[in-house]
Image (tube, rainbow, N blue to C red; front, side, top):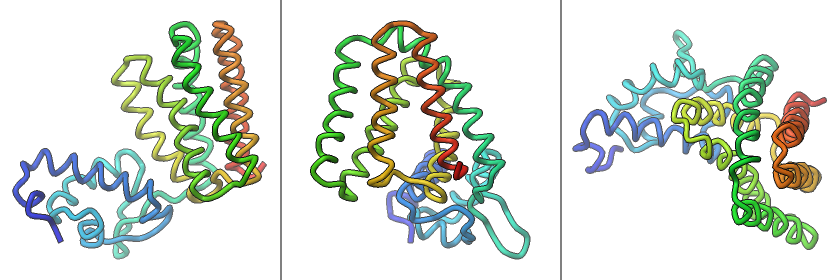
Length: 223
């Protein structure tokens, strides 16, 4: 049921809220890849009016996050090989530029803080890998990628990247997440990337990023 604040919010604000809350439902796995859901169910999940849900659906469809299936309702994007390949190809294109620039512009303090966060995860994992630690590791993982994209200062790239990162998260929900077995390799790949960034050599940093994203894509494809 919509909250009182939601009922009285301006239409444009409601559309943004609907989009943001849809994202949160994806990120918290309240809705999952391939799932069918009605407009009313989405309204109940987000706590927003049905009208706001109807207005945000065209945007979600345009971004490939859901599709309207006649007589069945709305289907959350179904993860298949095509989606995996396309999403990772776009991610690689965006992050090559971001990595090359970050290698030249990131401060030593920034790199120190990012590396410290990764090494803290590694130290904690040596004791025990818990669900809470995996959640923390995923946040650290995305934090590095987000920081590099944000450092570009390009709102167009940032917007495209944010939408694509939702597709990547959908893929992870459906196919692969950090686990006790994959956590250490993922952290090692990031630490190798950080070492390359510290050389201030864009080509070396980009090569490390390409290796990392190729491994991530292959894990999603089951290779």
